[in-house]
Amino acid sequence: MLMAFGENKSATVAQAVESPVSANLPASYLQQHPQVQFVLDGAAAADLTRIKSPWLSGPVPWNPEMTKRAVIWLARKLSKAILKLTDEDFGEHGLQDLLAGQGPAYDINLKVFRELVGKITGWPAGKPESLHRPGDIRRPGDAIFPKKILVFSPHPDDDVISMGGTIIRL
Image (tube, rainbow, N blue to C red; front, side, top):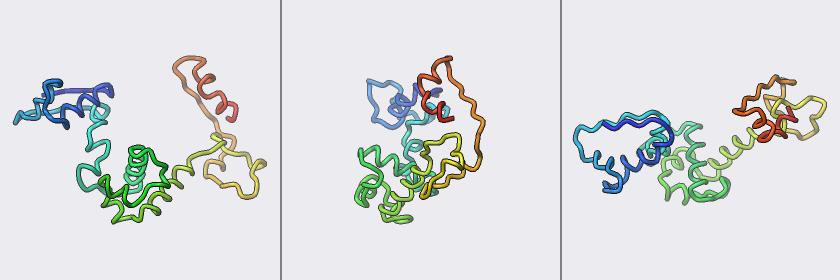
């Protein structure tokens, strides 16, 4: 039995489970044991292919969240902007099922891009009605203004140092 807990173990666990058996990682020999059991928490399992990119392990339900994960994964893997991903990129990286169900790449990319852009705002606490201009995108969060915000930080000045500009907007 191999037990691992915490994100610090995730890379080693993935190597022990998915890489070829190697003397450099004795735990990898457990792959050959007929009765081995791996006991992992979510953080330790995070780098396993079936968790990190399950579409590479087999068919997956292509719901909006899984589609978004796959497109972001592909863009990061290829170091390309989301809107520059092509049908070939999807096909060469195990995402043929996604293309077949929701394709072409242009439509998938645009849907994911618009969802991500829709989450970006310069007004994290909502935008006052008096500051709306013609052509502004109305966001659901703007309807509640002013919002009450509670900021947590591990050290008293971390919040000001790390997000001072955001706090001013709040």
